Structure formats: C-alpha cells, structure tokens
Length: 303
Image (tube, rainbow, N blue to C red; front, side):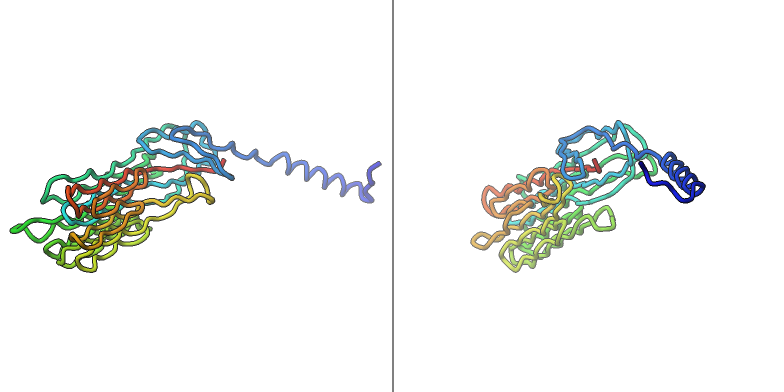
C-alpha cells in the first residue's frame, strides 16, 4: 500500500500540476535525415563526404544544424625551377537549414600541370555548397598558381597568384612576388600567402591553410605551408589534414622543398587528391609542374 499524504488537498494539487506539465512538454524533433556522398557514422554524428560534385538531399530537416568543411582545389606549381602552388581555401562553417530539399555540391578541380615555359602555375577552382536565400551559400576559393621563371628579356619572373592560399614566389633569375591568401575575404581566413624568394634561383612554397609558404633561403627550394586538421569526416579519433601548400624547387644541385598534403618540388609531384593540396614547382627535367589536388566537402550533423 502506498504512503498516504497528511494533506490530501496539497497531494491532489501537486499531482495534478505535475501531470499537466508532463502533458504539455513538446516531443523532441526527429533527427535530420539526408542522403548524398559517402556516409559515415560515429559517436553522435553522421557525415556525408563529397569527393565529386553532386547533391545533398535533405528529406527531414530535424533541428537543421549542419557543420560544413569546404576545401577548394589547390593551385598548380610553376614551371622551370619555380614555386609551389597555394592550397585551396579551407573553411569550417555552421549553418541552420530551415527546409527540406536538394542542395548542390560543387567540388573544385586542382590547377592543371604546366608543360610549356614562360607561364605561371594554373589556379585551382572554387568549391561550394549552394544554400537557399538568407541562409547563405558556402564557398572556398581555389588556390593560387605558383610563380614561374620567365626567360630574358621578360624578367622578372611570373609572380605567384593570389587564391584561397597564395602561390609561392619564383626566384629563378630575379626576385619574384608571392600570391596573397584569403581571396574570399573570409573571417576566419581561408588560407595564407605564399613564401618569398630572392633572385638567387631558388623558389618558395605555396601557402597552406595552417601557415604561409616557406621562404626560399637562396638557391634552394622551400616547403609549402602546413595544412589544417579537421574531424568532420571520421570523428575526433581520426583527424584528416587538408590544404597544404606545394613545395618550391631549387636550382639544380640545390635542395628542393619537400612534399606533404601539397606536392613536392624538384621532380614535381601533385597535391594530394581531395585535400586541396597545392602542386609542387618543377626543378628537374622534364620540368612539368605538379598539378593541384582537387577539393572536398564534408557535411555532418547530430544523429
């Protein structure tokens, strides 16, 4: 038998009030339900990874809160003892969706390799997630192409291009200028400038999401800027580094910048696919520059 209240009126009032509050509590919203890309689930979250352009299709908006990693294509390296390409812009953005529907995902390509002299590195292309009206779409800027050698009488060298991160400066034969980063004018910044180079034949690294490209110390090439880690794809136990700058090339017989998420200089290598890495500058025959790495978009939400 239950314990009787010594105050029947108070017991009735308290029981009735509690029942009324319980009955008036709204049901929690259903979780977001969406499709598109390659999905993964980890503690508390579901992610959708896009390595090629497509659609993020929301069938139930739920609370509507999404976190988006948007990385653009990296810039290609310069040609002929030249600089590394800048990384694609790196952005982490939170948005609140208010409606179901299909949202367009565009993955930027990396800047193509250069195979002819007297041209600068090719820029990377933008990546974006198109969202309706006042929500505001998310765009990251393609990386700047690396600075390249210009034979006499066309000195000074081609400068590094601006971009999400800027292309490095070419110092082959004449001091060159580096490309600036954060082409989209975002806060926080989407990237960093390329490194500088004196006119002593070595070339600088392209900028990365984490740091600027390294300056060439003279006739040696320099490393690309560091990339930045992100956990949206697989969770905090498996961070992935994106958007490293491409390395610059040294004069033959001198050191070249090393690789990473961006491409290495010297016998130039490409930026890593689907990381937005910048391509390496070329310093050794056949002098073809490194292609920039393509971009990526990862969308995650509470599951």
